[in-house]
Image 1: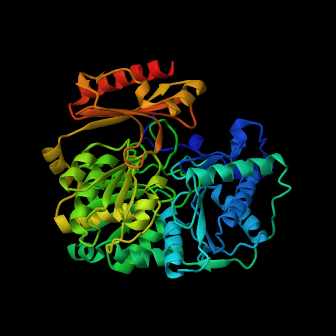
Image 2: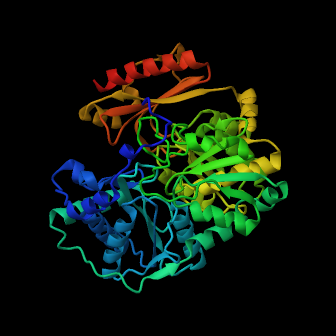
Image 3: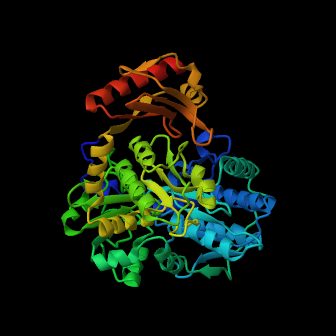
Length: 539
């Protein structure tokens, strides 16, 4: 933790926006330098123009690669594109439009030249394809690095299913983009973007919310709601939600600032728009007593933060458990066999909630893309990640978004409060009385690139230990139980605890996620032994 965590940003913390945009155009990547290559993580390509990791050349090459990929997949319908409030998002969207138009793609941009949240793009894709069966399918691009610092840019591709592209797609796109850069972009088509069609992302998304959230219950209960977009793309969406449905809703801070000078610093002293971080949300928390429900979103609104007067900022795992317990009891038209989806580093309290509901648990690797098939066919009604990202089905059991939707999860907190008469934090305390009160933490441990590579390919059988923190090990997993997909690391489980270890994609560390139902001291023991177990396996 930085000693400045949770304190207001100072002028010295702010980026030079003009210099950042200049670097976007003036710096040119060398495809032979690993740090300058196109690399798709769990949520697209990210980097900073200052580091020659997110520049005009990258975006032109990625977009051309997407054009070629979608053509190869037979995707010939319109392409929806939206961008968040990061300084690099607007120039990156302009670059992408130049390439899309030059390649003859029917592209749709926001009707009001507004910022567009990730869930609004996913919603648009699904809505279009549902309304045009048998016709060429639509797909989309979201220009966002999510909650990353202001110096970063990000670029994501969403195929016709509306969710994040899978590894096969992103690997192909990244490899082709790097080849294009190495070849001097000679095969990239560009033209002045003119006559581009528009789409009302905001109006279509907001008008459809009544088919997934009980907005009437919220209005009748008179719930006083505060929504802080944290300077992100959801700002105008929240204003329209309140107006459309007659809710007592205040946009706490509608300011859009590409420097994010109004933010408090995150745990490491950086500006980061993470609504699940107490440090990043410190200024929001000052208003916790002013509203029955106070929420935050990140820059592209795919993450949520829930603040209650009695509990402050909720741990994301705690809120996911409450949301699951509530939804499966209040959505009678969902399939009776629809599973509960969670990533394997999410809290085991969710396992216990799912069991109490008589629902199958569908545990998948890290990355929201794994939930897409289940959300599309209704076999998974809710998919959630410990990093405060989730989505769920409409009231009728059909797909809403197949990407994370922070606006939806934030608005659900008001429905829960209105219908139950209790805050989500009060409801979580009730869950702990039934299922136990786990403690959870993620820490980092040093590892070389070679060790990270070994961890990413580790087989559970390579672990020789049979006990963890005094308990018998019941599972050693290198594949997710829900879909048998490789987890890119390891998970070890006992009756009352577990840990998972995964290599970082950006730093020379591996991440240890751990949880115990036996208290803080036991968690520390789990973490210590986890490090010893993993270090021995990757030595």
